[in-house]
Length: 387
Length: 221
Ligand SMILES: Nc1ncnc2c1ncn2[C@@H]1O[C@H](COP(=O)(O)OP(=O)(O)OP(=O)(O)O)[C@@H](O)[C@H]1O
Ligand SMILES: [Mg+2]
Image (tube, rainbow over all chains, first blue to last red):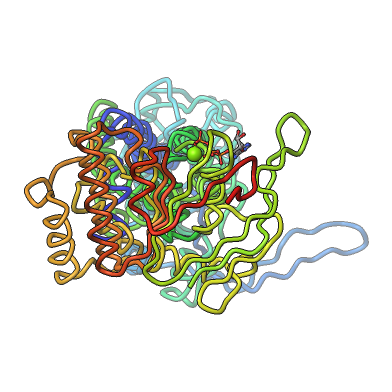
C-alpha cells in the first residue's frame, strides 16, 4: 500500500477504459517497433540489391602521378613506376577488415593493351562471379563467358573490330570464342574486351597481377569513411578511394526507407500520445471528487500530479514492454511474408526492450503532463463543490 | 486551540459578489464539541470549510496553535490536513476503488514508502471500534451510508486527529443509523477529540457542549 496503489486500483476499477487506452498506445508501440525492425531489414536488403549496380570503393596501387601540361596542351598523366597489386594477398587484406561483414563484393581487374589488326584495344581481366555481382545491369546478346577461352566484347569494341557473338578472336596466338557482345552501357565497358582474369594474367605473363579492385561495401550502419580507412590500414601502400557520389546516391535510397518509417512512427506516436493525453484530461473532471478527498487528507499538489503521472507511466510501461515483444514478433512475420528473412533477421535485443520500457512511460508521462497539471491545480475548495 | 477571527468570505455568482460569511469569530478549545446550526444557505458549510483550511477566507485570521493558517504555506496546511484535522463530508468521503482498509489508511499512502504493518494493525483496530472489522476488505460501493460515514470516522481515528469537522454527518442516514453515528462521536469526544459539527437536528445539537447559530453569515448567538 503506497501512492502507486491509488492509480493502480483506479485503473483496475475501469478495466474497459484502461484496456482501451492501453490497447491504443500498445498499437502505437507495436507498429513503431515493427516498422523500425522491418525498415532496418528492408533498408539492408535494398542496399544489398543496390550494390549490384556498381562498386563504391576503388583500391589501386599508389602511383607517383605527374600531370603534364605544356603550352596549353594537356599531355595526359605520366605514370612513373606503376606497381601491380597481388590478387590473393590484396583480396584477403580487404576481406579481413574489422567491418568485413560490410564488404559485399571484391572484384579484381587487370587491364592490358593489345593491338588487334592495327587497332589498339584494352583487355580487362575479371573474375566473372564477382564482376556480375556488381554489374547486374549488364546484358548481352549471347551469354556470359563460362570458360577461360570465352570472352565478352563491349559494344564499341565489337563494332570497331567487326566481330560478333560466335566469332573467334585471336590474341597472341590464342584463340578466343566470343560468347556475347554487351549491350551498350554508356560506360568504359563499351570499348573493351572482357576475359577471365587468370587467362589474361597468363597472357600478360603476370600471374597474380591486378591493376585495381572494385569493392562494393554496405554502408547503412557505418560511414563509408570507416570502411575506407580500415582497408587503407590493411593496405598502406595502396590508395583507397570512396566513390562518394555512388555512396551518397545509394544511401539516400536506403535513408529514404528509414526516414519514411521514422515519419510514420512519429505520426503514430503523436496520435497515441494525444489519445492518452485527451483521455486523461477528460478524466480530470470526473475525478474532481477524488482530488477533493485527497486534498482534504493533506495530499499536496505535487502528490496529485504524481498520481496522474504514475497512471500514465503504468500505461506506458505495459505498452512499452508488451509492445516491443509483440512488435518484434510481428516484424518477423511481416518479413517472412515479404520473404526477406534470408537477407537479414530483425535483431531481438534486451537493450532495445529496456529502452522501450523506459522511453514509452516517459512519452505517456509527457503526454499526461497537462492533464496532471490541470488536476493538481484544482484547489480543495473547487473540488469540494463536487462533493 | 483553533481561533477564527472576523472571517469574511463571499462568492461571486453571475458577476456579483455575494457575501456568505460577514465577520464570523469562533474559538475552539481542546476537546471542545461545538454544533453549528442555521437555515439552509446561512453559510454553515462555508464556515466549516474555512475552519478546516479547505476554503481560504477573503479576510480574517485563523490561528491554530500559534500560527496563522490564512497566510501559512501550502506545505504546512498539508501537514495539518494530514494529521491534525479530519473532515467528514455529508456524502463521498471515500475513494470508490480503494478498499475500506485502504481508505482508512489513505492519509498515509501519499508516498512511495509502503504503509507500515503497525499502521495497518492500528487501522484494523479503529475499524473494529466503529464496528467494521469484518468489512475491511470491501469496496465502499457495497457499504451502507452509515457504514461509509463510519469509515471516515475510523480514518480520523487512525490519524489521531485533534479536531474532527463534520458536515451533517447524519444528513443522509436514517434515524437509527444517525443515532449510532452520534453515539460514536460522543465516545470519541469523551476520549479527547475536539468536534465541530454542522447539523440540522436540534436533538443532535444538544449533544454538543455549545451551539452556534449562523444567520445570514453572522453568528446569531
Ligand atoms: N463554491 C461556491 N461558489 C458560489 N457560491 C457558493 C459556493 N459555496 C457556497 N455558496 C453559496 O454560499 C451560500 C452558503 O452556502 P453554504 O453551503 O455555506 O450553506 P449551508 O448553510 O451549508 O446550507 P445547507 O444547510 O443547505 O448545507 C449559499 O447561498 C451558496 O449558494
Ligand atoms: Mg451545508
